[in-house]
Image (cartoon, rainbow, N blue to C red):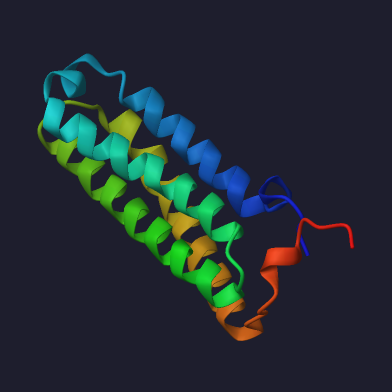
Length: 131
């Protein structure tokens, strides 16, 4: 059992994706469309935020629910990046790696959600204590 979120490989994959998307958000064309830029930024931040918040929940089922929100935010980021590409705000070279990385992260999230639902541990609140 992980005692810190940083011990989970999925967290590192999510941070890697978050960082890459943030780099894309610096694209001048995308920055001109403030609304789309903010939507991508907010959804991107939500992926890791929900992962971290879920880790602190008392049960695996509650953690899984936060991961569902992370997965939904990931889907939003990918959809909006495609929109940015079709509107010619970002290049295909910027989009393609994120689609691949996002698909991998989505599979990881889906698998982890299934695992947490099956394990259904109900004492997550003590994961950091040294009793």
